[in-house]
Image 1 (tube, helix red, strand yellow):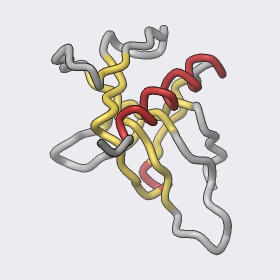
Image 2: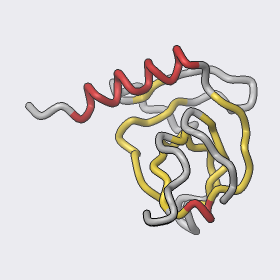
Image 3: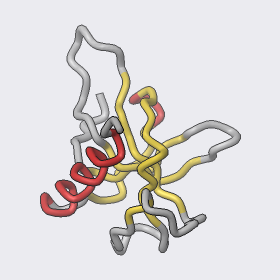
Length: 105
C-alpha cells in the first residue's frame, strides 16, 4: 500500500485522455478483502464557474477547483505522489457540498 489517507491530495494517473492531475482522496486505504480502489475528486484548472466547482486555494495546487461532478474510483496503483492535504474544516466543506450533489431530487 502507498500510505494514503482521506483528505490528502495526490497526483493521480488517469490515463492518456485525462492525464496526470491532482485529486482529493475521499476514501482511506482498502482492507485486504476489498478491491484495491480509492475514490477521488479531480482537481481541474479548466474552471467553468458552475455550482459544482469548489475552489480551495492551496500552495501545492495551480489555480482551479475540485469538480464535484468528477468523482471516480481508481486503482490505488495510479496514485503517484502526495501533494498535500486539506484541513479538517476544508474536508468537511467538500463532504457537505458532495452530499448536496448526491441528493436525490
